[in-house]
Every structure is written in structure tokens, then in C-alpha cells.
Amino acid sequence: MTKAFQTLSSWEAILAGVSAFAYAYFFVIAKDVTMYSLSLLLLGIFSIKVMIALFARLKKVDEDFARVAMILGVIGGAGMAVHGGYDLANAINPPALVNTDLPNQVDPRGLLAFGFTGFAILKFSWLMAKDSYFPEGLRWIGFLSGALLVVIYVARLTVLNPANPVLLYPVLINGFVLGPLWYLWLGKVFRRK
Image (cartoon, rainbow, N blue to C red; front, side, top):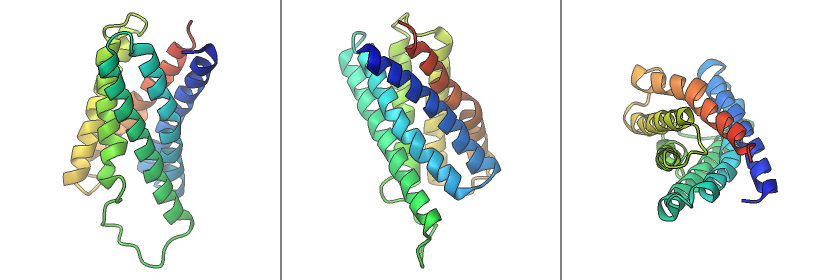
């Protein structure tokens, strides 16, 4: 990984952490559709470079597993961006008729945004455990965050009410703490030589 790419990845990891927190805030507390959609769109865009940077760093541990994790993460990031972009387009210019009960056709109930991204973070965290470059705490936050993202996806399939504790608590824990912390800490780690 070149120094320039590593530096840019560091900044985008930090921006992904800020976007993850903003998404949680605007989704759970402010309930501002425009802002949470924009935050999800930005989180998806910023997370793509983070996933590629993780692959570049972790391919020496196990290139095949790192490639699978990167592909899942890039697809997850693109899914987040599309999901956020779709919701943002509807918030800015609402269609005359829209059935909000129907799942997003590209990212149904967060399959990509939460499911794929969760599995990518789990795989990357497993690879981080074999590379002393990554702090142990970061790996554990990744394991917890990845697992909660998968739980959020499964809960969104079965529980449509966001206030239901089965969905709300994982969203609160991952959205306000684990997800942003994982990205922000990665940003700090990527700044190291």
C-alpha cells in the first residue's frame, strides 16, 4: 500500500466513523430522513476505501480470505451508498406514490449495508488477530461490531418496528459506539508507518 493511499484511507476511515455516528444519531434520535440517508450514503462511500486498505494490509496474512472480506466489504459499502442514495432521493423529491412497507430492491432490509458489511468486518477482524500491526482491542471491537451488524440485518428481516428492543439495542450499541469506534480507530492505525 502506498503512503498516499494509506493516508487517504486513514482520513476516509475517520470520515466513515463520523458518518456512522451521524447515521445512528439522525436515524434513532433526530429521525431526520434526509440526514440519515445522506449519512448512510457517505458511510458507504468512505467505507469502500477502508475495505480495500484492509485487504492491502492483510493479504500477507491470508490473501484468499482477505480478498473475500474485501469483496464483501466493497459490496456492502456500495450497498450502503445505494441504499442511502435511494432514501435520500425519496426524501428530497418524494414520489407521488410510494409503498414504504416494500424493502429496497437493491438492498432489501439492509442485506448489503448490514449483512455483507458485518461479515466483512468479522472476516477482517479474524485476519487482524494474526497481524500484530492491529491492536487487540480493535480486533475485539470489530468482532462485536460485525456480529451486531449481522444481528441487525436478521432483525430487520423479521422485526419491522425499529423501536422493538431486538432491533433497537443492537442499533444503539453498534451505531453509537462500536461502529464509529472501529472506523475511527482504524483511521488512527492507518496513520502509523
